[in-house]
Image 1: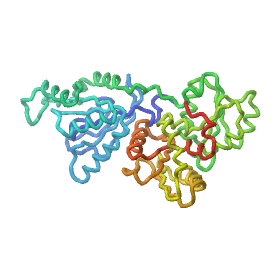
Image 2: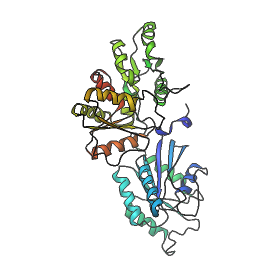
Image 3: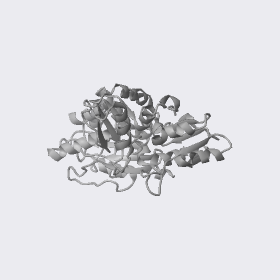
Image 4: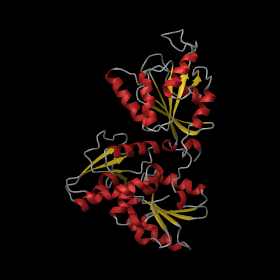
Length: 406
C-alpha cells in the first residue's frame, strides 16, 4: 500500500473555511496544483463539503475539505452552513481564508474552531489586482493584515491563490501546525514488536465482503508487516488446526469481536488476545473512556434506550453485528423491551439526552478527530459511550482477560 493508497480516514484532514467567494476553492487548487475544486465568481458555488485526497510534499497524505461559505443565506444556505459545521468535526487543521479585514462572523468561526482545539491558520488571499478591500480601496494590505492578526491572535499567511504566490509558506505553516500525535498513532502499539508471531482470526461469513478483506484487517496486516512481524491468518473454524501446526503459541491473537469468546476459550495460555474493534477503539477514539463507559450496561433497565452508531452506510445483511447481534446480546441481559436505535454514516442525533448508552463501531471509515468530536458530544450530554469490541468482550465476560492497551 503506497501513501497514495492510504485510506481517507487515516489522512490529515485540512478544512478550508471562509466567507463566500473568499477564494477557498482557488486556494485548494493552488495547494494541490490541480483543478480540484470548482471556482466561480457566483456566490455559493460550493454546496456540500468537497473532500479531496491528496499527497502534498512535506505534509504527506491528506484530505482537503472545501466547505461552503458560512455567510450563505436562505434556507439552502442554512443547510450548507450546517454541513460546514459537520465538516469542522472532522478537521485536524483549519485554514481560515480572508479576502479583506475580518468581520464578526468570521471571527466567531475562528473562536469556535479554536475552542474545539483545532489549530487555525489565518490566510489572507489577495485579489489579482492586489485590492484587499473592494468596499474601501484605500485600505492598505498592512492594515488588513493587522486587523486579521488582532482579531485572531495569529499572524496571517499572505497568498495569491490565482498566482500561487505564498503557497510554499502556507505549506510550511501547515507542517508547523501538525498535531503533536499526528504520526504517533498506531493500531497495534506495544502489543506487537519485530519478530512476534501474530495470528489473525477472521471469520469469512455472510458479513465478509466477497473477494476482499475489510479495512481494519487490511490496515492491521500492513502495520504488522511494517513492524517485521510474522503474520498468519485463519477463519474461526480453522483456529485449532492452525494452532496445531505452529511450533510455538503465537505471541498475539487478533480476532473479529463477534467470535471473541470462542477464540478466548481455544487460545493458548501464553498468547495475548485482542480484537480489531478493540484496537480501533484506541486508534480512533479514547479507549479508557470506552472501557469505563461499557460498565453502564449494568445500570440499564428494560425502559432504557441505547444508540448504536455505525460509521459506514453498508446495506445491512442477516446477523449484522450492530443491528442484530449486539442488540440481541443486550436484550438477553436486560430484557426484550430494551429500545435500541441505530444510525449510520454522518447521521448522529443532535440531542443525545434520550439515551442511556452509545455503542459506536470501530469507526474505520472516520478519522480520529471525528470520533473524538462524537465522544465530546456524548460527554456534553453525560451519556456514556463505548464501542462494539469492548461491548462484546464485556457481555462475554472476558473484558478483564484481553489486552486493551495498544
